[in-house]
Image (cartoon, rainbow, N blue to C red):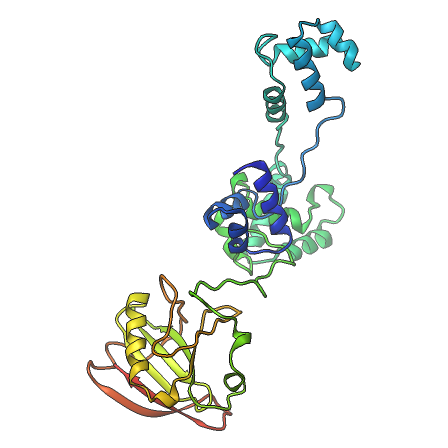
Length: 350
């Protein structure tokens, strides 16, 4: 990944775009985007600044042109207003007069300028030990900073900011704080995210020819007509799963037992169930994608689904191989949540 692409990646990350959106915009897999973010803990690195007085790229270009023209070090130094020793050292450190190239010399200078210093917690063992103890007790970095200010306010060696603690936790390559302590933070995230980071309003659906939920018919939105169905995949224990179809108006629930959660199994089972339904009770099907905007697919003969696996809802279900015998259809009436005004009709197809 080029430096320009990485700069665009960090710009989009700071703007709050998700990894999926960034990967599509820069043309790289999501795993590659995450690798770049994880290397810095999700915290954008600061811009690199050259030391005052060091040679610039333009000056190195002038040195290269002067060497090609056969000029002496003194003549080049006089043209640039530099000391002769500076020009001589620059050329000697980059292969001599015959092989000196400005771009290669600039890259070597940037590499030699990398002098990463230890982070604050690595330089202060007592502070690091206190932070580790409190993190294991599931204190947040903000709470830790408040505790240190109250009990060690007179000790400059115990001063730290919460952002420094976050950076030390998420930048695991520093090996200052054990990797497993990331799980003690309340968010449980592997990388740092800013306050503007959100997936709200971002198109994340993988369903073929999907339409936004805002485009669904008005009768489906206000639940005024029969036949507008909501589809979902429910995952239970012991590798059991069922598909559900719920009529938005009547709340009539149809449960279809599945041998697998894969599309090749789910779609034919739903299509067969959909085909056996009364044509007046099958107008549209709204599959749940797990995150807004939820796509709506208008069905005429069978529902459409995305390639790959169907996004499941991990809710325990009683309709599994042990409770629903094969080739048996059971119909029951189940109450809705407490406080509801109606009962939900349920049809379980096994």
